[in-house]
Length: 384
Image (cartoon, rainbow, N blue to C red; front, side, top):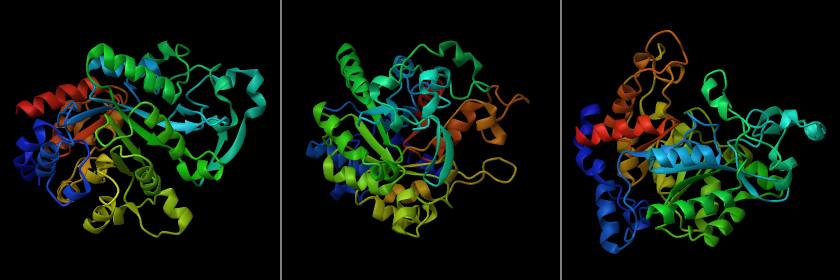
């Protein structure tokens, strides 16, 4: 399996070509589809993305508190190919960048006595949570908070930056990307996720229409836009497909899990069903890629070591779908057991070895908390 992945490497390592594969190209192999897209003009005027593509996961979140302009800027300065944002709404309908609507662990909200009465318990996608939630704050109120490191025990160095940055609105990020694009002379690529879209639609705070409006305002609504849209809920991607032409990716969690919109609608399918050839064929009807967990590409055994690659890469590519798995991190606690070094779970392990193994499986890119490491690994792999 690993050798099969390498055999197709030269075509896939060169460039992504058109980031979006047209519906007519869905049945092609990825290299052929990209070539066809370039011939038809779909990729014209676009900065070609290298393969493997490095996506800065929540920004350079291994070095700065996640989803801050500081984390986004550092990722871009490192050379990340794409910078990721997760979107949740405020009470007054603005989209802000947080991995979760529960901001208890990523802001200093607990230190604000004026918001003590906002602490509450909610059930979000079947999970009961107690804390403070973005949908209970206006944007102006959120702007009085400051971002903090989410996992300070693992990344104590990042706590140096606690309190330095606000919670950014997505519109602020779009303006930042425009400025940086002009300064650098090339587009800044963004990877934008709708978080808990069914939950928020039930509150009257639908994400997709608000997101589409901003994408149109900033010219990121076209098929050749330097943007990917992503969601763990296929229904959100289908809704976005009706609103904008921006390239779209379905995120896939563990094999036994079910997308929350499936749970709500009674759809019995699990992620295991979606990664079959039939499931991938269904996804290719409204999306251009998938974002599986790395474990769906190469499972870990009971001992935590990597096993043999699944057929997911081959099957997805056969349907013309890109694969951008998540999430690479340098720390031992996140690496497969065969790439851990020493006994400190928070020390860096053999991240380069792990990344090379995933790249050899034929993936098109990877989300990384440590984009500098992933960029070096990708460069090494392209030269090999």
